[in-house]
Length: 302
Length: 285
Image 1: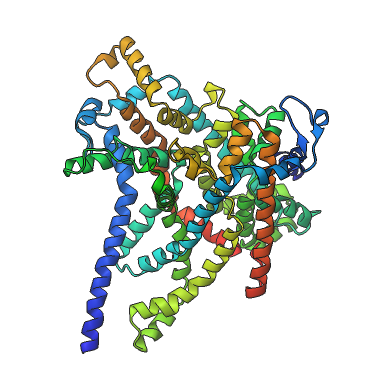
Image 2: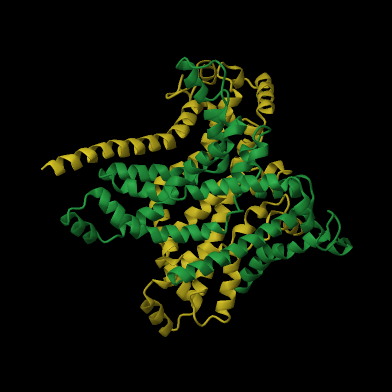
């Protein structure tokens, strides 16, 4: 009896600490985003005077409307959406096809070509040679530098190949007996059955495209019209003063901005941060189950 | 049908590897390789006399050492989370702690800036609680660069890294626990004698893979959090290559540093693979 009491007491103490730790960790994960959201929906002047802590002060949504009057912001949102849509569909299409052909034993030179692909996971040219080579290709200040380097990813091909390999082979065999070619089998049988892995890859590639900014920084920083949302935010973060000037200038011209709720640089940073992170947060609950599934397929293989 | 893809891989991945040859030429922008002077190992020798290298190498190794010293954190996170019996809370923690992984480094930087800069919310709290009048900025404190950057990196990756262990734990045969409980084992002993040994192999494999990346700390985080105060401690090899190559246009030397780094990494990867084959009978790559 004594033993049981002792162990249940220590159990209780452990539980208090354990739940306490996870509560704290959850708070640390949520609070920064919550704070930025609160600031972005606060009245800029009130927020600057009193400081936001947990709740918005003087609730307003006009900040979101107003930041789009900033030079180039709307265009950068468009570029981010474009690269995400084109890049993601391109990556999914290319990797799906490659993942499929690499499951075919009769494919000529399969082992060598597969190795040719996988090696790129471990060796890369590195930043400088890649930069110089892409420059020689004319990819500098070119939209396609956001797309082409990401089209074929060995990691995604492995995931897809592993997924297709565990599909029942009987359907494909009977289709082949009926005289269907590889392309027909691919589009009629493999692709429809592979939707779970397509969703997984689309999520990974999509978030990757949306979040990517370093290529903008080294390949396209000279071309304003190619600035992505992420890089726009980076510019606002690193040039707080220039932003303040731009806002002051806009205030001089713009009738709406002359109203009391004119933006502060801090409100702009917070609002643009929110706009940049919102798409990921908004689709996160829907894609969460796919990512867990996705990395498990990879983990089993790796 | 597969050929176009292979050409794409060749152009985007293999031609840049061929670009390593720049490291033995005196490459100048605007010239073709044939017009440049062949200088042999000059730039590789320069690495050893470059007075910046000891500093950036130290930073790289310190960040990596700290990283390796705490690689058990995701495993501990998973084991502790498994002890949370309230299913909905457990799921909530798992969901919320994974979110930072999907946030770009720019956003992380922006959040850190909002929280910790001199006009950030941390100082607001300190001020409201009647703390010191002088604002603190932990992002511009050279004494705690390693700690702060590690904490930020963990904030971003801990939940995500633990997923693989959470999945490994959920695949453990429940009968093992049941029979252990019958034998009088408490939850702590179950965790120590059943859960931990079951997920340890996963840990070892991931550790071996990561060891080869000891010099590859990446550059995004360090690039963004670098400022005039933190610069001496935050500049890692990857960032140094960026600075020498793209900011100072010293292409050949930056390539030589990059090539050296790659060769060391690949050698270590093969070594890790060899060790893995010896101790567990199967390769990791």
